[in-house]
Length: 340
View 1 (tube, rainbow, N blue to C red):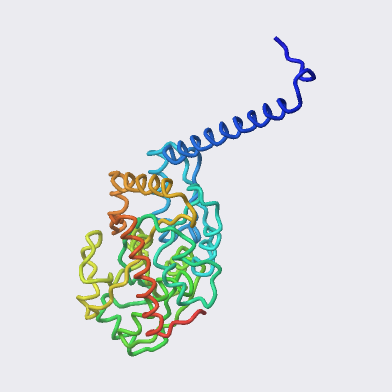
View 2 (view 1 turned 120 degrees about the vertical axis):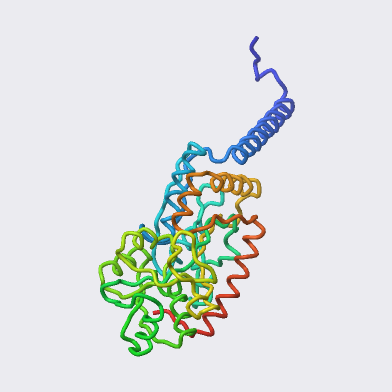
């Protein structure tokens, strides 16, 4: 049957048009809402980008890449590592803060990003306001490593004696001004009453390579990125931070053993999403991270790097971020650390 629209009164046509439009809109809303609900419940449905705010080869990479490999096994989707280094990790953070808040661009930052607010006079993002903390991924002690060719000390007693007798003779590399590597060095100088020249790099990877090459003398590094080089004899570990030895390196003394009980610096890495990411998507990501952390493959990698997987709830990690911002502000003020 066909209908001749010319025989239908105009008012009826208008009513029919309104009903059709309303029906179409309702169907679109229903299907759109259903699709969005499926997207949240079924996340990820496509590849996910993980912004790593340092060059490849550094401490963040040491955990990001195994995480990406396990993510692919667990979800069948790709986790793409997007290395965006510069300005102590703040370039990558700025980029990630402006990403679409849909769960498909995530940010892997860390302790550097709770230090930055006290070091940089002006940032175009706020780590507490423009990001949503999701999960603590790794907690790693800092380690003092030296090039055995340029630093002849075989233990901390010899090292401290040499540094105190030769102020400004040695230098230390960092992943950049305002990073944990930098502040770890400044805190060490403050607590040991020594002077060592700071040389900032554009990431822990380049800093570590120059240490291995003998172009710098020492580095306060996260144990994760230095671990393989310590085991390979290319660099020497003199001390791990904190009050206990690390199981991965039982022969390396802790700070408390060498007379530095308050040297409790740790390098930690966490996962954030841009502000505005829906709560149900956040929950899916947090659940997936929990599954990844329980995988034996990842446990093995973390243990070999001397690290602990996060083990915090999302709320606990959020509280930790706020606490760390305040803590490092006090260290920056006490040490007088400056951007270089």
